[in-house]
Image 1 (cartoon, one colour):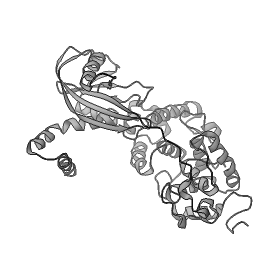
Image 2: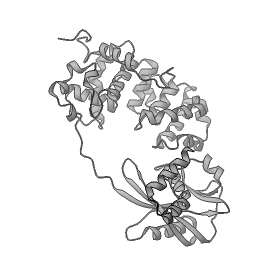
Image 3: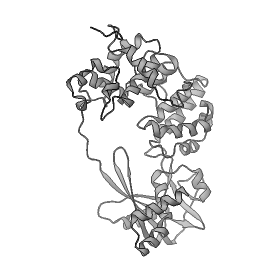
Length: 388
């Protein structure tokens, strides 16, 4: 028999969930006034990124690009700079392309249906549904990882929600709840918020859940078994090198191809270490291949690891000295000598930022090593300087 909060035509207790949401919803800058452009930017940023990480980026991005027209007119390098550090830069490039289409083809106004929104670059079914329901009231379910987790436990589903058919099947089951909702956007946000705050991946707080009374996983005590854990493939480690080369107070940087990983960002020249060669040999080879230069000395500066979604980068940093040859820099080319001021303006890869910090710390590390200080003490001293 349905509870007093549950309409028999709906798949779960919608009223109880909405009441919980009104009492527990988090304050977010894109929720204050659900402007379609702001919601769109936030949803793109929130793809594979935690809310806490997105907040400051969203605020800075909206200050620089307050309207879709401002974003469409901006140079892509400026857009990438404001995205720097957030990762998954393809999102920023597609957001920029979509803004240009909205201005050119839709008069600067976002389409109001999920079907039309889904035709814009970078907007998939989830993002289209979120914008259409939150901003325009379309009764279309939003199925993200949080929603999938809530109802995998609620219904004891073993589906692989990384696959489209599983997400589509769950959306079909949720549709009757949206059809009868006065504010479909609130209901979608309530389901997502429940997964983020209560029905967490680990240690779900079932005592605070408005759906607990009818949750199958809770009834059987098997919350930890849902959603099904899929076997993860081992993440390969890719050894790479980067070369710091300075002349006359300028640093040589290379711009990555605009279509690939980290496309359009600037980085120290370098690349992969091939089997059978050392990192130093790779650095010498790549310096010749990329810039046509020979280094009299390549000094190891340390290593950095950085995790991407599908591999881990192990980056060996070298400083090049006593250089022979001349770099041919062409306007608009992939190599450029840059100043310290340029480093504040150009969008750089995260590993390049970290590599430059590592090189900057070399004198401190050497002095500490001569005095016998541990690496931990060196790091503590650096943190103290940063706070001061």
